[in-house]
Length: 259
Image (cartoon, rainbow, N blue to C red; front, side):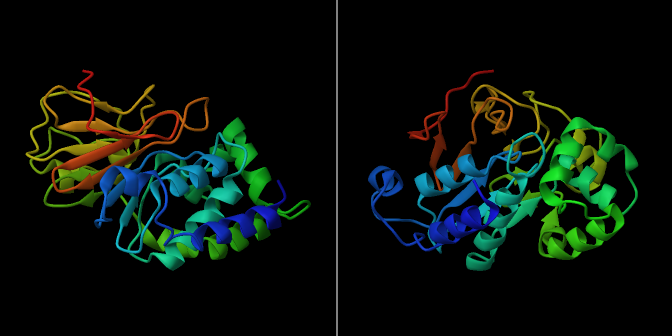
């Protein structure tokens, strides 16, 4: 799919934000403001568009992306275009750092030369840099082009009901939410019961075959391996109602306790 065509399809998606005739409203009745957490996208623009259509995003919704927008998939540029348009239409959208995003940013700022030596890094750079564009010039252009995203990225998103982070938290810290280092928040791999935090933690980063909830209901993993043979997932919160998406894009009420 050409870059221009995909950008036009992204804009076409935004024009449907107020269409109320899909599965979300069938499941939820009259639309209620929702908090929607979306897992690791990894360059899969088609899956991102499909999920957003399925969710029927409304202006009253708040979306929180859990990071890892780039690498692995075939269309990082398309993903970033979609996110930019969505952010323009819904400024309340929040974006968390993922470890892949941080590695890319460090490469752009000449702090991580190893990134361009990895296969995933090479593929992303190839997708984003213009042909025959000098690397240094390209880095400056990309830093400016995606300044809007870098300025919005956060290492966690905390609410009274729950907290979201890309990788995990360091439970040995006195205040795991605020004292865990940025590096730990994007790189920690965890999916365990017994969290000392008195609110659920929503994470990505560690791929699972489906959305999973620990037996004590204190941790939810919504990374379902998008970009590597899996699919993109969302977790929807509204008061006591929790919906999640399955591999076919269907909205399911509640979650099984599978650990």
